[in-house]
Structure formats: C-alpha cells, structure tokens
Image (cartoon, rainbow, N blue to C red; front, side, top):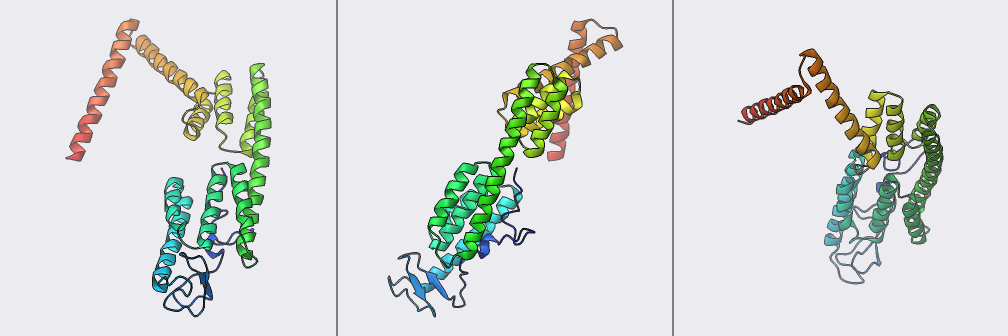
Length: 285
C-alpha cells in the first residue's frame, strides 16, 4: 500500500509541499485576498465589514474558513493514523467553503483513492482539479502533478505484480511450487498488500509443508481482503487439520478410542470457555 505520509507530510525528501499550504492562506489578520463562500467572488484587502458583492458578514466568513482549515488538518491526521472513513466524513463540510478549500478537498480525495489503489479514479480527479487551477495556484499544481506521478508509479508496480502473480498461478497449477513461490515473492516485492498473491503463496507453501509461513500469508490475505475465498478455505483446512492432530495426540497419549478422545477435547474446550467467562466477570466487577 502506498505510504500514508508521502503526500501529506509537511516536507519530504522529494520536496513535496503540504496540502495545508496549497493555495492562499486564510487568517483573521487581513489576508491579501479571499473568496466569499456565498457569491464566490474575490473580497479585496483590507477586508471590509461585509462582502462588497453580496453583503455576507466578513467575520462569519473568516470563522467558516477557520473551521474548514481545522477540518482539513483533522482529515490529514486521520489519514496518517489510517482512519480513512473518518477523513472522508470530515471533508464533507469543507466543500461548502471557498474554491481553494474545495480544491484541497478534491486533492485529499485523490490521495485517498490512491491509498485505496483506485489509481484510475485518482488520476481522473487530478485532471479535473488541474482544469480548475489558476495561474496563482502554482504550489497546488505542483502537488497535483506530484500525486499524479505517484499514481503512475503505483500503476506500474501493480502491473508488474499481476504479471508475477499470473506466472506463479500457471506454475502452481503445473505443480512447480518452487518456481511459483519465487514469482509470488517478486509480486509482493512490487505490491506488498496484494491479497491474491498472499493467498496463493499460502496455498503453495501448504503444498510444500511450510505450515508456519503458509498460515502467515493466508492470514495476511484475509486481513487485506476478508472475503478472499482462497485464504478462507485453506485457513479453515489448516484449523481442521490442527484439531485432528490434537485429537490424534490425545488418543495416543492416553490410549483412548477416537470417540473418547473427541469427547475429552470438547470437555477441555468447554472448561476453557467457562474459566475465561468467570475471569472476565470477576475483572468487570
């Protein structure tokens, strides 16, 4: 997954500007100029008490801008912490303010789409943003170009990942598991969160009796894509096999019949559940 901070940090090694700095700053201390969110026309500086075009109160406009700036900052913090849904909710309010704020919101949405690997949608959104940028929006244009470049890099990485994955799938079907494993590791080097590659690698490693590594990759696939059918099926298969192994161990250890071994396992599981419930109740009281 693309790094959360690379397009939203204040300053990176690639010299990317901060989203917060893209466009004219709006402060209460007499900005050079600002756009009225009501009539969307420029209010000259020094700002009068009311918008000269639509009579909207300037103090109300400034308060609205400060709230919008705060919402943008909180959305950026949400993205850094990985809370994408909260970031999206915060951006709804900012759309109601100035053109500059609306463009910043669109840029953040493009970043979110890139983080979710919807690169085609992100590039289309960025192109739309470019159409609305003026000559004074140089910093914002630089930021848009930078995000677009990263989207193109992501597309190339995903294409290479899929090429390695398809070759591994072909090799796995032929039973060439070593070759398949090498190709899948190359795929995950390109895109580390590719669920299909993790799932297939887990399946291949199961066939190679590499149970610990297989479990790791199957769980990674399920964490990335909870509906992944390959990971779901083979994790269930592994759990069932582990249960059968425990029953076999109990049966041989205590010289029990299969029925008594299963019964003992069920009793032990019920006892563990009861103990856990009792401890939880005591701690909650």
